[in-house]
Length: 111
Ligand SMILES: [Zn+2]
Ligand SMILES: [Zn+2]
Image (cartoon, rainbow, N blue to C red; front, top):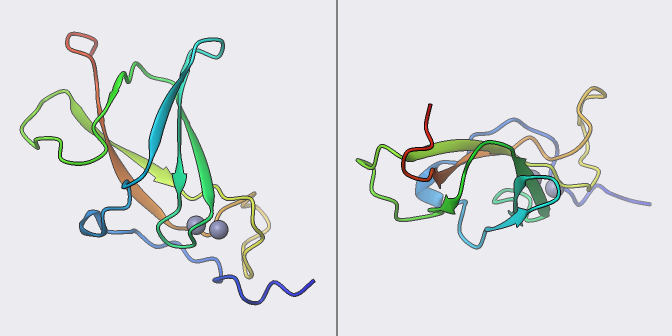
C-alpha cells in the first residue's frame, strides 16, 4: 500500500482567515451528553470528529460577533484516521493541523 500521496504530518495552525470551520456541523449526543463536531480537516480534507463536553449549545461556526462574551474559540486538532507519513508514534491520528472553531455558549451557562 503506497500512502506517499498523503501530506506528511506537520503541526500547523490553520488561520481563521481560511475559514476552516466552514461546512462543520454539531450534533447533540443525548446519551453521551456531549456535542459531536464533525467536518473535514482544512489541511488534509479527511473527515474529523471532535467531542466537546462542556455546555456548548449553539454553534457559531462562522460569523459570530467577536464582542459576544458567550462566544469562545475551541481548538480542534485534525483527528482523521488516515495514516499520514512522518507522524510520531505517540500521535494516534490526524495530520497535525489545528484550528479554532467558534462556539457559542448558552446565556448564563458560563461559570
Ligand atoms: Zn488526514
Ligand atoms: Zn488533517
